[in-house]
Length: 181
Length: 205
Image (tube, rainbow over all chains, first blue to last red; front, side, top):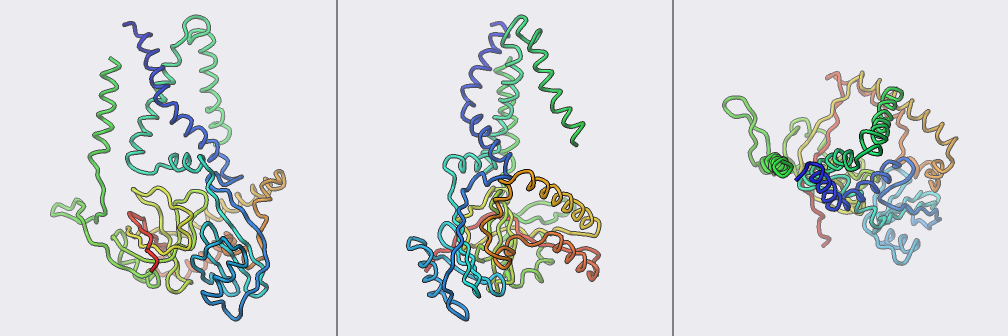
């Protein structure tokens, strides 16, 4: 079989196999790229409240009752005092930080972003076997990129317009390296 | 040709990764001075005495119990454990077989097995850190002015007391470390953490 037919077969079949991985890494990549502006894995809900704080220092039972003040469906886990005048109560799915003198409190609940949480988890490399599989994916992407150069023949292929576009794609990162490093 | 090439690549990857099965091991020297790994039982340590014991335990396998007080929100690669005395806390980092800690662990009692690691900080490092922190703060202030959406990330903080728990002034931290470094006989500061190999949540009785 001629090499360009093999080229097309490789490009097609690798494209099908790694379609899912490409979507996972691309979507989570965009999400993680903007990590300064948002939390890509969790939706963080914050609410300011005023609580009645038993003095001098709430016991465990009193802390449980304080959690019920915040919300009936919240489940108390543990509490501690990170510094004088501040109490942190852990609840299932979040925490409440309380100024014990004033009762001013901040409830913080974390919800996993559906689908995106799982994608980010995979992007962060959850284990040795996943590292192996994602290395395979990276090699496949290189093969897809190289084989893609030679899919189209003629003036719209690598000997014509394709050369310009591929060249542009190489020049852009070089420019970034020169100006922003 | 492509079939053979793919087969060679696949076999290479399998050989590379199947050769290094890691379990919790400790480095010891053999008779010719090269390090080999052998299985070792973890040493039980307490968070409350960790800072004083850690120097002798660097690169050793330990087991420790504590309450998870914080998991890094963005990467999930760090968590902090509290001792019996909440003034004592221990940093735990992800290891080879654990890539991320779930934020839902906060408030849970856990048992962690891992290796004690030491990070050394000297004056040159602190000077560089201070320079980068000042640059980042300047950049962040400029970005906040230009982007009001970024400023809204800081909404919801009640007051200084509650805000400061997880948002300590980084420049003050650096100043404190420089002061501590002046008094250090070693000429550097040591920060100890545990590189987690395995952990489990303690069942509530």
